[in-house]
Amino acid sequence: MHNRRVSLPRRIAHLDMDAFFASVELLRYPQLQGLPVVIGGGRREADRLLRERHAGVPLAQIPVAAFPLLKDYVGRGVITTATYPARQFGVGSAMGMMKAAKLCPQAIVLPVDFDEVRRFSRAFKAVIREIAPVMEDRGIDEVYIDFTEVPGGQREGGRVLARLIQKSIFEATGLTCSIGVAPNKLIAKMASEFDKPNGISIVHEQDVQARIWPLPVRKINGIGPKSEEKLHRLHIRTIGELAARPREWLVDHFGASYGAWMHDAAWGRDERPVVTESEPVSMSRETTFERDLHAVRDRTELGAIFTDLCRRVAEDLRRKGYVGRTIGIKLRYDDFRTATRDLTLDHATDDAATIRRAAGQCLKRVDLGRRLRLLGVRVGKLAKAGSEAAAEVRTPVAAEHTPDLFHEGPAVERPATSKG
DNA sequence: TCTGGGGTCCTAGGACCC
DNA sequence: TCTGGGGTCCTAGGACCC
Image 1 (cartoon, rainbow, N blue to C red):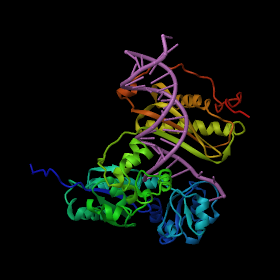
Image 2 (cartoon, rainbow, N blue to C red):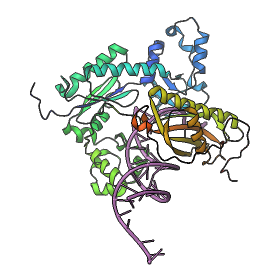
Image 3 (cartoon, rainbow, N blue to C red):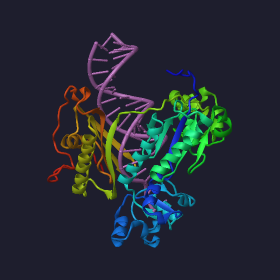
């Protein structure tokens, strides 16, 4: 047994694939390399037409002029990813397609191919696990990796291992990524952004003041638009200015938990471990309609969508081997307000009809007088199918089986809560 | 020109139980 | 008789992240 060093300095890496969704598309359409391209919108129609019109032509040989442009885009949706040439126009993730079209009308727009992206996601993660097994999944294009005990993980502060991982991912997938290595997840996450694309940044504990403090507070993972705005009102713009405030002062303004966390974050303190396995808490399906729909006038259409969402979430549960006890719905109104309702059953289920019935009961408790832009169905309180927790039956609640407004069948009801 | 879809975690009030 | 306290579960909303 080798002598285990008690106190190897913690080296945590954050790895982020560069413009992931767009880069996957560029492998298919290399003729778009170097051009502004955005992925998003979710409407596959234009892409289908493109391929149809060029049937028999290899994808790589479809002329650039044949691709749909952002200025011709119609419909709802946001940008999922923009290539770096597109980003130079100020276009970025989560931006509405219409706004992006103003900034960069000549950008080529492609839909997301989720199956393809998932395939590449599995591939790059497999490459990492081969080299450094302590990896935490943070979504489709991001991971944390604990370098501490990996051979070579300490050399040059982690740069040697980061280079190896970068090279191995490129060889396996043709895709580039950016890596930050630091004493903890919080700093590693910020560091991975320092040198994009295809960069590596090494940050040590003693670098926090010089490299982290000048950054805007929004760069801290966990400070979003709301907290940023509030901090600005308090005349705090940089992480250094945040660090300069007494802990108690932050607790007074942001609460015991969030205030204390903010103070630690500003000082670069973060002890969270890299978590290799986790169980899902909920599964959901939701959809934004092409146009806002009205509960009564568009009842048939909404009913079909509602039932389909239930069917799809049930399918997801079964495919992944889970059952859930809490069934919930989500509505977004035309004014963008969101309402949720949920109902906990006496037993866990993965059955579409059971989910549909429970979701229908939830529907009765919400205002259906306004036009809707989104409908969603969620199943929570998950347990592995067949596990003891899954079999547990709570005190039965009185089962209600009266039809809801969206039930399949003749329209007999009025919206329950619509008031003038 | 309004703003996707999939998640996690936190807070807070009320029900209910001991 | 005028008012305990702790714990857990349920529900709704919101901030945040990828």
